Image (cartoon, rainbow, N blue to C red; front, top):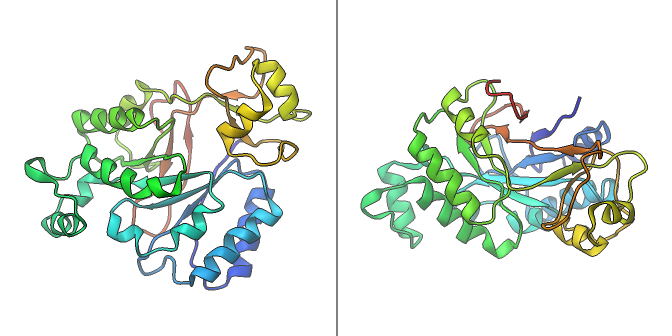
Length: 280
């Protein structure tokens, strides 16, 4: 059964946290979402500990898919060692909870950060735009996460449209078990732009490049791979734009969304919503 993992990392006992993360990846997790936040119960370590943590994971799993998820508000991003975590990440997943952000204290903090929400307030477009600008310095793909409790089709339509307009290929919703059916319907009506492939036994990048009528360099560029020989079974690869995947390839997958968890809370599960599964 394919699964993805979500973890809260604290940076207090780095060796133990590395062992836990590498153990989960060794057990077959297709990706590891690292929840990096500054609230009590979340990150409490140093920047040195942050680098030791990601280096420790990469030594054991150099080809693993690692996604770092953060509170999307710019002043919160400044409170975490994101530079160190981004050095080992495949993507960043900003938690764009526009409904939670729409308070007067947050409006004032946005203004202090040089971003005035204006008359429209903190909309999905505003919250995503400010997060994207802040995270652009890391030059990583974005995987935005939206609030599943918000039953507002217009807002969700705006969030999805604005995400795709920024070349976002997939996005997520917080979270399995609480996301409203309307949100799942909206996501199912807007499948991801990325074509994803799960590496099968015997696959190599050279073989896949031939099958997909593309080059090894294009596959490496699309997946931020630095060594063409480092590809492992169950690794999820993004198919480069313009490539052709034969229908017979058994590893092709098309996830619609990933159920995540909210900023500032303690636990949650991750589940990839498949085509035809409108409710979880």
